[in-house]
Amino acid sequence: MRFLWLLFVAMLAAYSFSGEPTEGTEDITIAYKVLAVYPQSRRVLITCDIPEAPRPITYSLMASRGVLVAKRVVRDYKPATFNINITLKSSPDLLTYSCQAASDLGTYGPSSRLQMYLELWDKPVSQLQTDVTLYNGDSGPTANLSCLASSGSPPIIYRLVADDGHVRVQQRPLHGEPATFSIPLSQMSGWFQCEATNGISADSSAPILLPPAEAQPRLLTTLVLALIVFSCIFGEGYSNTHNTDQLHCVFNKNEDACRYGSAIGVLAFLASAFFLVVDALFSQISNATDRKYLVIGDLLFSALWTFLWFVGFCFLTNQWAATKAEDVLVGADSARAAITFSFFSIFSWGVLAFLAYQRYKAGVDAFIENYVDPTPDPNTAYASYPSSSVENYQQPPFTQNVETTEGYQPPPVY
Image 1 (cartoon, one colour):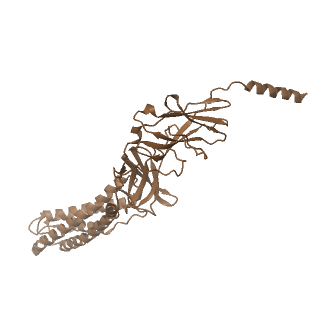
Image 2 (cartoon, rainbow, N blue to C red):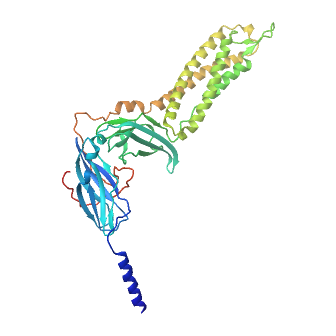
Image 3 (cartoon, one colour):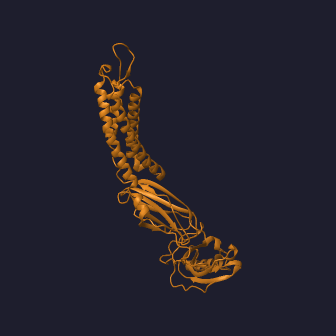
């Protein structure tokens, strides 16, 4: 008796759920990938998918004004793919595609519209922007370099060009999304450029300096020498005679000599302390522009102070040679020490200027000599892009990545 009752309930439930198909509420996603580029046409792979709908399901690719382009029945849970050739038009209304679907439970769609027209494809690459973020990864200090062209026809290929002109890595991200290069600083450092090209034109970013994993230690000699010079002048650089209590500079009573020696000594000491802190924190500075300015600032300051120490040494030596012995009761040793360490400071800051120059010049010369602008010749024919993988689609914001279903023969040219 219980068995008959259960059978009756099952039959009633089956009857209550049967009836006419209804319109489904699931959303259909539409995506595309450019397979080949021609002067006035493109070979495009359009993908339609509705993951939650029961199978089998029939997908329809609709063109403008409700024209049916192709149909495909999918019995598994893979997306439907349509490999078509499109001729680009000047009006967006002439090339508008959408997907519709139907199953035993009802119809779905249409999807959001996918517009293709001539202006969309023939834009050169421009407004290339880059951003660098430094962090400590599992393999040590790592730099994430992000490149994005704000304008340009898809597909856009991004390349990371090293200072020797060779392409280290390249990516072809979704249209509108940046290419992100992760660079272990223990393996690669120096000057890099981000290059974007789409077969119509190419654009390159400004050179970006990626610091080495271990920052180059700064010489402490400059700081110590500067401390000695201005300490000698401040301590015993001024003296008086028996006839007066008025203090005067021991360097031939020339106040400018004492002021000059103490000024460049104090400024050199403060600058050395600043650049020591910069060297310690250089790998943590994520802004590429800031790092570039710091390297240039180090180079210019070191070169300038090399010259100023040379002028100071000559100036102090000249004034000390003209100083009368009876005018110097105390401070003679301090004056000689200031002159001596001013002389040593010339070479110390010269070494720093040379190291800073090497640091800045490490990849610039090679980059300028070896880098070739990849901008194609306007007379050159369009190159076809290889159809290697269809996992990453050029797609609008409302779509998602899908996989390719094999065995589909493309319909005729529309």
